[in-house]
Image (tube, rainbow, N blue to C red; front, side):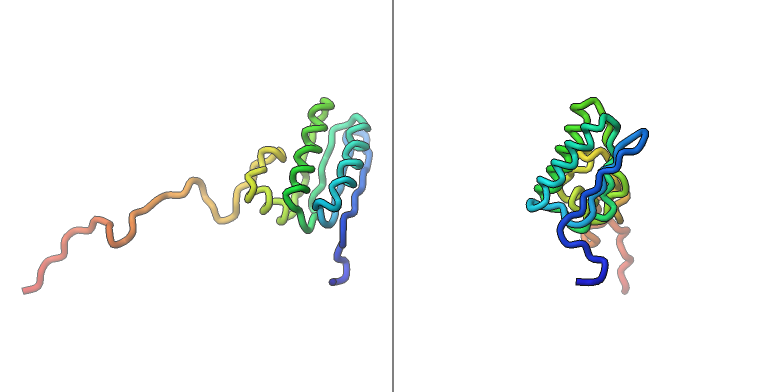
Length: 135
């Protein structure tokens, strides 16, 4: 492992005057979701809007993603707003693959995609003007 690599999950709850920050760093997977749930309950219990800082998440599986969605729903059920802040590339990719962006509260464009795909006919079937015949 390289220097600075986070193994497991580091969970931080920071209560600020206007909101509470739930900061996750490392791997959000089945082994770590209980720690996320406990921290989320503490954060929601503060009674302030919640910011989920996912910028340092290095891995997320389906169970971890479902837990993040559940955290957001718990905040809303308590009458609080919950915003995802700086999701890492890993979180963005897994959310896009599972089409969970809306459940996480954001709609991020997928890189390289510019609007709806346009279907073109294969080159062999395109209509071209007839070529003049050579004598």
